[in-house]
Image 1 (cartoon, rainbow, N blue to C red):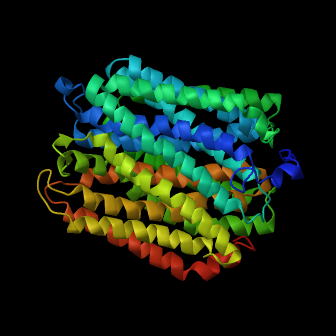
Image 2 (image 1 turned 90 degrees about the horizontal axis):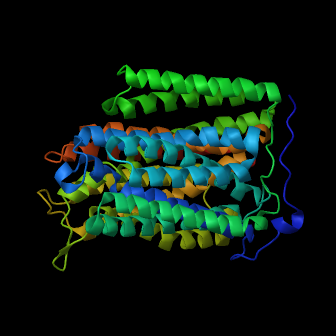
Length: 490
């Protein structure tokens, strides 16, 4: 069927520079994503320790290996859900309404975690948050991209500012939920995450008009018969998952491996569908091929970076000296260190890209620096002292600073790249495909965490660090070939 592109905003809106030289509508998307990240990272800051802490400490008493697998699988499902959210946006509701309803799901998930007991609350809450966050991430990013022309030099800077909003939420969330958990319990921390998402919804509703119709309609709407067919398929998938869970095929200790398999299969299928589509032009197809090596680099990057929520949480709990002037600060506070670096650095990176203009490094080089940088950060763990709660906070702060610099080289640039390389018929879904690389990397972070041994951690950090550095070098060498395939996109 023919594709009707979504209605673009008026040219006057595209030239709007009311928000630090960026369109005013960026503030609304900045705000809703900031509060969504506040709730997401606030909850995730205490999730792993909630799973493996003993019941006498308010936790569920699950083994560390199973707990890290659950967290990795959940994080992977968040990003796999961006595929679902992107598809619904492109074919059913449009990006703007999908964003709104997804944020409601996120809030419902945090409420479930805060009021439902034990594994029931974990199951219901994580499913709702995963699907809701996936919808928010895919659509918010797509809407930001819609605020700019394809060749607008402000685009990367705008995405960096948007990314700063994400990290403000990521910074404050774990600080407050961690304090509340230490003083009132886990469920109060989860409740605060729900309140944060509610504030984001209020802000979004009040200033919704600033979008001026951007993303109001699906770009390729389903017919009535197609809607019925997809609804039936959705019900069938839910039934199959329920049966596999009840029969013991899907278990907690297998979750991260299952999500890795799903993400890998979805990646291969998605690339095949896009490349084989008759709605994709020759130039668009070349750009999709150029995206592939950067997709793989992104997988490697996120498989290391997302260990902030698995290995680094255990490291912070058992290896880090968290004594601060006689007071031991909460484990979750460590997860706010990296966002501090990002909040400080995002503006600097945005200004740097804007000042450099067309002289800035090509996207493949930025990806190479980001992936290689993560490898260097992991290698620096080899310099930290061994022993129970002996690693200095300042050392971890410096390592997480390298995490942040690497993230700013790859993540906001990757979001921008997905909107620039996207075929017209797969606009929002191309953003979801980038998030699929994050899904695969995040699920792998849970699988890889099983090999971490706090009593002999050097081989773990050395192996993963060297692999990431090698991938960065290969990508840099291949940069001229990739730039040629990008067909004019920088």
